[in-house]
Image 1: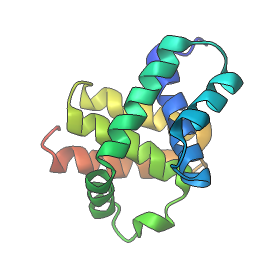
Image 2: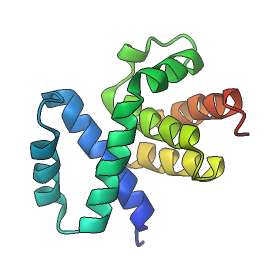
Image 3: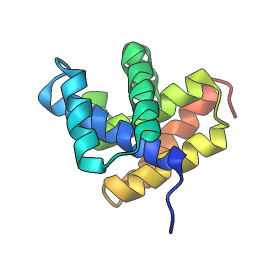
Image 4: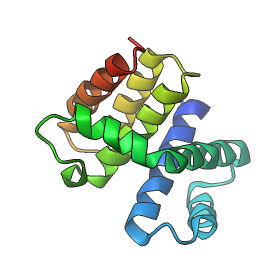
Length: 138
């Protein structure tokens, strides 16, 4: 199965956000360059992933508040890092409103299947669906 460029972009953004969360946000350029060396030469995918990460980081406080409100009975900081960053990407895309909400949810669920635990896709779907409804996207 061929993975679309849009899915690759989100996967790279997830990997970069995870790296920045684990090692610190001090040197985004070094983290980005290291990821590019590991994932191969796809400049367009990589540049678009960095742009997505920049958008998430610029609005992270608002994104985290929306996620916290929608993740009932879960403190946001207790959600696993991979799931937390999948939610951040999805919520950012819902806030920007360029990508249709159904695509945002489908892509986030795809990321959860690929990178997170067995229960993550349902959790991601539930939280993003709630955020999308709260934002008036659905």
